[in-house]
Length: 172
Image (cartoon, rainbow, N blue to C red; front, side, top):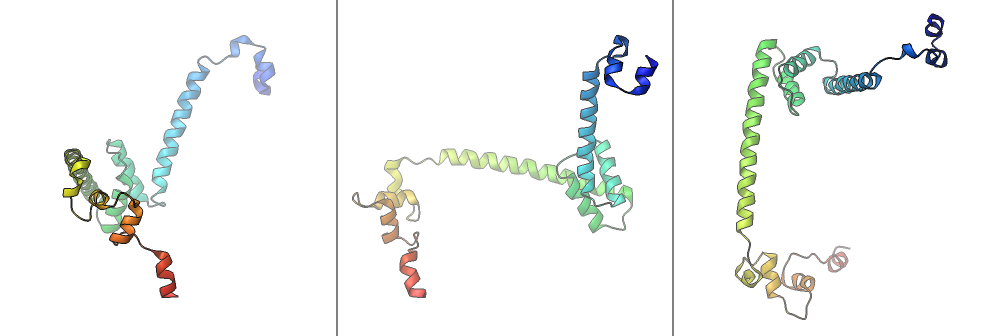
């Protein structure tokens, strides 16, 4: 058995049933997940191009649970704008900036929800399209003659369609 282990040959080791590692699949999955975590951490840290202060700040913030998609640009901005600041000062500035970003994102979400609500309430039935502003394509659609296509109407009646075939001889 010792000779099989020392040789490192899998066929000799397989002869001994008691040399099986229990839960090998579970251990492989754990190792793969650890490698993936280290790789993603390395990818983020490589953004700092070896700047030790930025890397330390990043790791401290991640350890504090402040990891977010805007962490890398925020750390870069803080270090570039305040190169003489101490580590605690930079930490407090970055934490403050990340709070502002979160507040700004929540305001943007509220605004987008309000816009979505107003879009839904602005539905206009086709029979009322003739009451819209003259620049609205729905209004223009109501103004076209039945025999003409919508494109022909826009080309003849508005400046929305640019006739390149007419323009080329003029500029050549």
